[in-house]
Length: 393
Ligand code: FAS
Ligand code: PHB
Image (cartoon, rainbow, N blue to C red; front, side):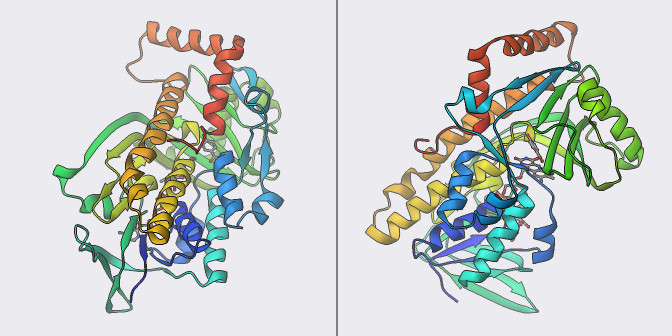
């Protein structure tokens, strides 16, 4: 088998990259280790930046998002129960965010691949890379008891944090930068109306909480919890009680309770690998970097990476120029690090750290109260939250 670009991973990065290449006439094949059902059932991100929305429009995969997604012009913060709103639209000259689950984005992109005959090979096990440092790279895998091989011109490593692509790069050629947080997020999904029409990020003596949503009838909530916590210690009633305390009385009054249809704990880390390239292999999305979900940047960084990578690959196949490919890592990392900073800052500002002393807690409170009262501080937050421009780096 042969194609121009072999893509490892059918998450948002791989699927969006395939569509961006497809609409420009560049062929690709995606190799995904999991089944389609598994990929389409994962519950993850919920907020799309304007740039991500525009990319989905660019590849014609925005119809259901437009019909079912929720445009949010603002977001609220609650500090020990006292709430204030950040006017995203007013503070950014008109930008907002789209609340539309990553699960739905994934389903829409897979449906587009199927409709356009763009190959996605699911249940591909033992994916391995070859020839990456030469000019004839290839990927091998096993499926239905057969060994398979795909020859290509370039490989896009879109296989997430635990994938094989970054791990295939010789350690001497790549450098990781990491911060692991001493807590996780316990998330629940419930078919109850959200407690508020916009998201609420809450910081409280007891810890962080987030009230989000997937639709007017489906809520997504998170509370900061020990990362090694046993989910059995968190029956629904305890989670609802904790959310009511941390989100504050206004939210608690509007909070509909119901059975969780999904419950999980995710660890939090900041991580960046440099460079995002090795020979003919280019990393994109979680394969290259991870952010704590506080800033809602993970999925959106995957989108900006593949925006830059698709532009570089399309130029290469159209004009023969490798300038875009040579500049990809630096261009992507320039935007990645800014999102890493915002996510790290927002996490440090709103979470309770075990080793936090009284002074640190008062610094948090002082900064939160400064943001409550400062248009300039809120504007800085708003422009990061809606997403920094895709144009530059
Ligand atoms: P993904 O991890 O989504 O996709 C990688 C794909 O590669 C997967 O389908 C995987 O099966 C496949 N793969 C892995 N190894 C492979 C191999 N060896 N061979 C073939 N395929 C392989 N972000 C937010 O913004 N907000 C959130 O609330 C949020 N919550 C999250 C919760 C969890 C539990 C996790 C893990 C992540 C969360 N994220 C969140 C971040 C998440 O949304 C990612 O940023 C986003 O999925 C990145 O997309 P990809 O880079 O495509 O990676
Ligand atoms: C979500 O709805 O899953 C979500 C929203 C905002 C975040 C993180 C997660 O910052």
